[in-house]
Image (cartoon, rainbow, N blue to C red):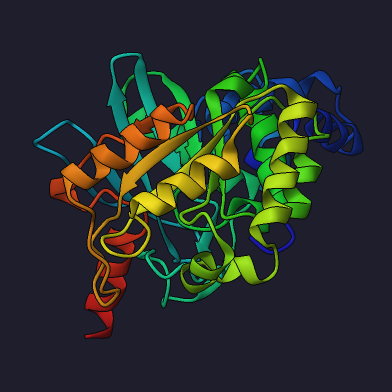
Length: 347
């Protein structure tokens, strides 16, 4: 693919420019944009282009294509986990979730991750590279095509730190949001971050009303330093200040993700600290009983402790939900399947 351009990675404007440089009319750009966003992977299937144009295009361009390596469907709730092989052989994963309001897909933004959060299945496997905008988009297209039903919501919360791949992330959002493409509204897209403060502030100025989801997981620097290395660069005070600016600028409510770890961050004192930290903010807290991941030593909090933690936050004025566990029988949590596959290969 060296020297050739990925058509799925281009906006309509970039495609129009490509065709004009080829000596063709610019409206061809819109036609190709519509084709690739429908999931077409073969340039010869673009039947409203002449054969000569298609042949020229094949010499200068290609279309990103993911390969479904494995697919697991939960017998509990229908959640589907996909292991995808990228065109360079790297492996990523996506999850299709079924809700009453429709289908949601959780996608990856990187191959591996640099952030090193202690409870995450991706930690220890290292960082390989960023995904392109088209590789993110193709996860949505491929899952939608395989499911045979429209994807209504996107969560960028799979493998990787989306804000560590900022430019490709923003391009992906604009591509997937385009009315001539998948036309998924920005308000139906959630982006998760472990707390990269400069990028939170940058996103607030993009005029993209996505939902920001911040992985907090501790209400004080001492504990957060232990489980989330990013906190050593951007302390909780700096993070919360950036989040306040984000809500004030966008008028969008922030979700704070809080993984409850037995005996680590699930005490009533931590619930009090968390409620004090978030008091008055346009936000809500999503409590997540932590996933059991090999070699972390972390265990999920009991249901009783989760409910008491939730109750304490609510009594102190913080809107709180407990994330429904999906696909428990297929290791549907981020990074678990990829980790299992890589460890099996090493063995």
